[in-house]
Length: 292
Image 1: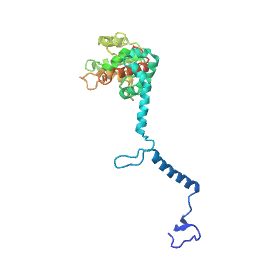
Image 2: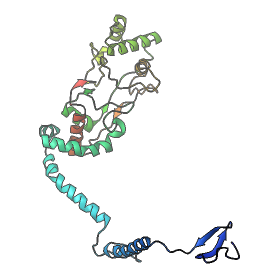
Image 3: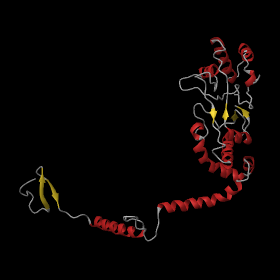
Image 4: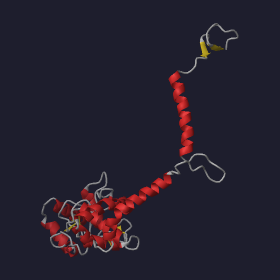
């Protein structure tokens, strides 16, 4: 800072740095001052109209008494009033009856999206596309059937598949041959030797002589290209199928077995919520009843 002002006559404070950097006393522009005082005025008016000033035990309520929480509650009441006409109808209806009513079905598809996000999306994905290790709900292929009543039963009671591990009963060569046969089925290929192994080892008991599965047992259809357990990144479908055959599904005797269990929601959700979810899932997959 200079001891003597090197810029006499200039409206500065006398503070100078690096020979010519100085602090001036020029007033702000008039428009800026107008905006500043207008904002001060609005701040005072806001404090009168809306809740603002804190006190020891509460706060000033403002002229209007408005609060964000009250606005939120009012909004909930408005939504509840709109929904009431539909919710009252749903109380005594089955999922099948909801599907038969176009307006109610449209309402349930919109409102049940939240339920699906809360209870189903973690496993089946936000759009029903399925995460790795969990079934896809957005197709028309089903393990236990895709009728509305079956979906209600699945949600209410849960599902748990079972396939015995075959690793200790089949040789390495037989495991390879059977896995190759199963993958070939999904590609439309035939293999008499593989078919004989499939039959002789008892696979037909669950998956049927045509390998299209049995919905009553929840056994998979092996003739399509939809897999209950999809190959992980870097894994071929052949390796994936071989692992399933070798270690089974929910086989407590094999630590590497596939885990496939859907929890029951009958004790967690009421009947109306389950019906809503069933309708939502039914429409995701087109409601077909093919084996999956």
